[in-house]
Length: 537
Image 1: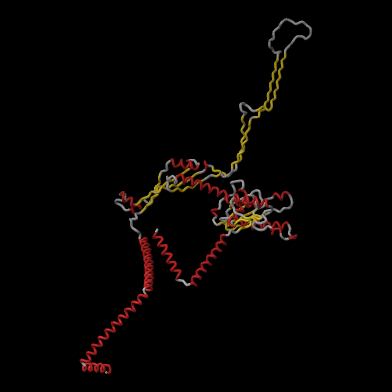
Image 2 (image 1 turned 90 degrees about the vertical axis):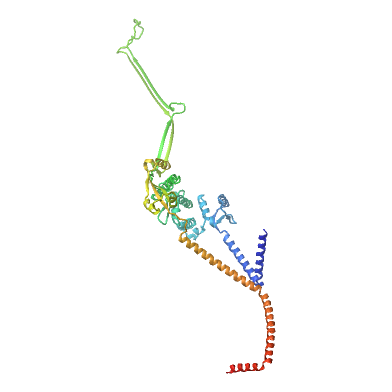
């Protein structure tokens, strides 16, 4: 802890020393520049971070404004309201989300002032207003759709039916055709296109999306009005659904075989039979009432007739004859008729079932699967196990480079059948063992890696050399600056001593010369004469 405090103090001291090098004018200039930069940054940050609002909706009443506010608050969308309480604005970055939200709730959002539609004075006819409104809505849709993700540009054409005052014309819905230029066409899904169609229909005031068509600039039909209540759609939609089904089947098989580590790689080619017929079935089920063998009796007709004929005595007051017994003979006849008609009302259950098109006929669908199992041959492992005795790895690779067909277990067929619903008889699987050869690295570094490492070391060495030289130069300069006064004083002292020594030395030499001249005047004279002769000769 103490070392850290000392380092901080040393750093602070160095900063103070660096700051003290500047003059008062330089310090003032630095402070002013830094302050100006900070103020400029604050202004830029304030401008960039300040949200930009766009008008979302202009209400006819404050009650409608409160409904819009409640809707935005439920979806956590920031907004602000004008002073009159009629105009609702939202940040620009969430404008598209808010527009779609209002459209889904039958609130046509405002982007441009619709007042321009009705401007023009008394000379403007209803037909002119209709055309202006049509242009207004087209521009509005184009701007809104362009702000959506994955949409570069939008071209919208609207056909508003002419209102001739009749009830039939009022019931007619508008038509809209939308062409989108997409950044990534493959990312546009059928659901997204359906949402856009619903948004356009709501903004137009249509009850359905039957009159809305959406396509992209490459000619793909993204949404057709007939897709409203049917999965069949057109040829493009059918192909899209079939592709989605194929992808689902491929993913299921991949999870079942590769995910379970049965095989390392599978290629699935499904041939799905899709039934695009819309089937409507009505089923009547009759059941008796509880505790009865028949239903409730609603009508009963019963008819009965009986007739008898025989020979009798004379009616009147005559006495009866002898007692006789009746024997059936041809003179006797008997007729009996019984007729019954009953109507019952049993319990009846009527079930209407409508099956949408696009269902898979599993019994007539088929699958073709190619499964691959990778067999890895590692040179180091083969050398360690002795598998390469008497041969080299390259020779072994050449001799075993072909893939080998293998038998597929019945359980694999059952797994695929259970995963997809397609019968085993309609599934064909071909499996192979494919070799993968991994050569030995030998514990050596490749020449490329050596070159790269050497280059890195060289660059680091050059950088270190430059840094050390620069540090040495700075240190020498600092030492010279620090010792300049001491060296000067020392040099002055040394010079004084040298001068004193030279003075003393010169006095002794002079005495010796004078002594020599006094003792040998002739020799000195000859010596001078010779010097003069050499100089002037």
